[in-house]
Image (tube, rainbow over all chains, first blue to last red; front, side, top):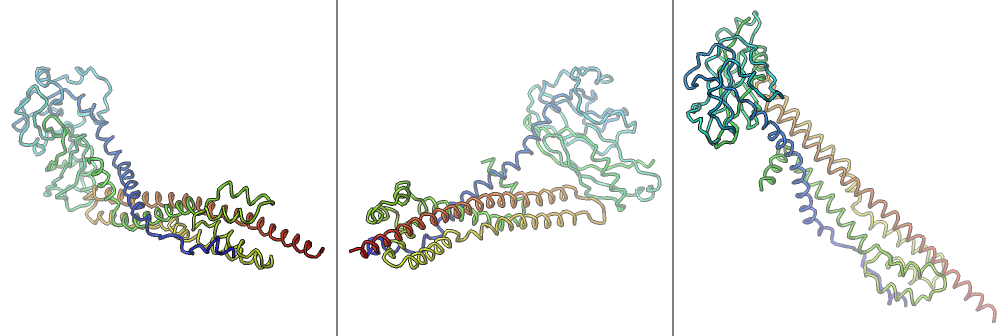
Length: 226
Length: 217
C-alpha cells in the first residue's frame, strides 16, 4: 500500500567512473604546481648571484688574445660587460683591490694565494674580447677568475708524472660550476685531490648578447707535486 | 609555457615511480570526488523533514508526501520508506527491516573507502621505493675510479627525494579525505539510527493507542 507511494529506490547508487577525468585534471594541476615548487629554487639561485657579476671591475691590462706571460697571481678576467667597459682599461693594474669602492666582497678565494706560474691550458674561449665595445651586447666565452693548481703529496708523484688529466667545467649563467673529469688519472686518490682543487675554481660566465649564458669548458690540468 | 616546461622537467626527475604514484593520486581524487557528490546529493536531510520526524503528532501521509519530494536515490528516503512500508506489521519486524536497510546503506556509504585508506599507506611506500631506486642508481656512479661524475650522483639523489615528496603529498590528501568521509559516514548513520528509533517509537505508540481503543468498546 504505502510501498506504492514511496517505491523501492534502486540499490545501485551511481556510476563510479564519472569523476575520473576530473580527478585526472586535478592531479595534473597539482603535479604542475608541485613541479613549479621544485623548479622555483633554481630560479632564485640564478637571480641571486647577479650583483656579484657586476661588482668585479678590475681587469688585467695586457691584451688577452695570446697566452699571457703574466707571472703575478692575478688572473682576473675581463671586466663585467654590463658596465660600460672602456674605463677600466685605464686603471693601473697593480692595485685593483684598493680601487674598489664597494666593500661587500663575497668573493671567497683570495687570489694572491698561489704564486705559481700561470698554467697555460685554461685559455679563454676562442673569441676572447676583440670587442670591449660600449654596449653590453658582446659575446665572450667563460673565463676563469681563480684557478689554483692542484697540489699532490710527494708519494703520489710517480702516479702523476706521466698522466694528463682533462676536466670539463659546466659553467652556469650565475657563475657556479660543476666539474667532472673527462680523462681521470689512474689513481682514485689523485682524482679526489684534483677534484677538490677544481671545485674551488671560480669562473666568470660566458656572455652572449649581453647576458650570461651557460657554457662548457675543457681544461687540461697541470699538477704540482709538493 | 616556460613554467609548464620547468615543472615538467622537475617532475621528470622523479623517475619511473611517478607513474604508479600518479595512478594512486587519480584514484584517490576520483573516490573523494565521488564521495563528496554522493553526500551532497543523496545523503542530505532537509531541516523541514527533520523537524517533522522529531515531532510526534505528524500524519504519516505528510511524511510520505515529503519523502516523495526527495531525490529517488536519497538514502534517508530509502530508509524511511522501508519503515513506512512495514508500519502495519509488528514493531519487531519493522525494527528488523530498518536495521537491514541501515546495514545496506552503510555498506553503500563506505564503498571504496578502503581504497582511500590503502592509498594513505601505500603512497609513501611507493615514494620510498622510488627513493631507494634513485639512491642505488646514484651511488652506483661512484665507481672504482673515484667520484668521476658528481652531477650524476646529485641528480640521482634529487630524483629520489622528488619521488618521496610526491608520495607524501598524495598520502596527505588521501588521509584528509579518508578521515573526513569516515566521519561523515558515522554522522549520517548516527542520524539515521536516531530518526529510525523515533519513527518506530511513533509506530509503537500508534499501535498501542489503536489496541486500547479497540479493546475499550
